[in-house]
Length: 392
Image 1 (spheres, one colour):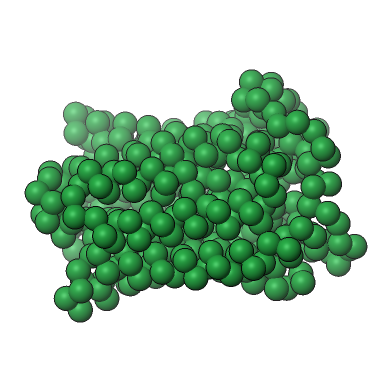
Image 2 (cartoon, helix red, strand yellow; image 1 turned 90 degrees about the vertical axis):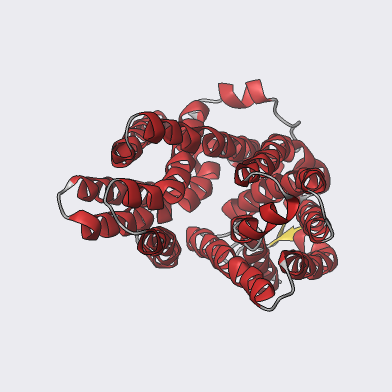
């Protein structure tokens, strides 16, 4: 049962990544077909993000009532329906309507599934599972490219991924009885899932924030996700506008950031055997600092490429180790509530911080890219160290 459920969770994480990167891949074709400005992709992205924030904040209450298995099945089903709705859409505003269930489904499953893994599996599985998310995010654009180059159109790209999500939904529905018993990663006795919650009532947002150390971990997570998203989104623009790299080369350089994250998380799974979550978070932060420092050096495009790879490698352990360490910091009773709010803070950071750098690049200079990343990193390090001191 332990291995079967783990295999299903791995499939779920690949599924989480599949649709996350396809809007960007298909949008150059979609916006022309709909006759809307290219910037309208941001509207869809914001709707999805708001839906994710709302469902993340509700995840504690929903998961306590339904259990992780049902929440995962329902959420993936909502995402599948939304993707199939995208595939049958022929107007921009229809896409906006389908973006609502897409966001609501994504937030619940992300928070609930991450908490379940943090409670019941070792840190190495958390890293490898997030590596699987990266695999899904990598494969998604290839599926869309297959549909576009084959003359089937972007609609079929969404339909293929929607059908894959639908198949996973069926698998998850049949697996619900397995989720009702949790198998401990250390080979311990099976235990009912509800015991992790201690039977307590769901916490309000005010109660969650009032927990000792909660503010620190929320700001830490906000900073990490803001840094990752800003680094990935503006890497190409920084290379083109500041380093004078041509657009095609810049795009390939920017992809090295994501390769660094995915490869780093695969490696991090092995490092967790020897190092603690806290040690790996600090190690990741140090590598990010090294990467941004390299970008300041006068090594031209080569230095920027090395810097981006290092920032990606540094980002690799931070997200999964913060999530996995949450039950240790706050206890199993509070971890679902904390992780749900963490996910909400993550999307707030993604919504606010990359556009803020866009304004800086537009009105001041894109050369401030490494400075901006370093400023976010410093705040993240300060908050994480405050959390560690409070725990001691």
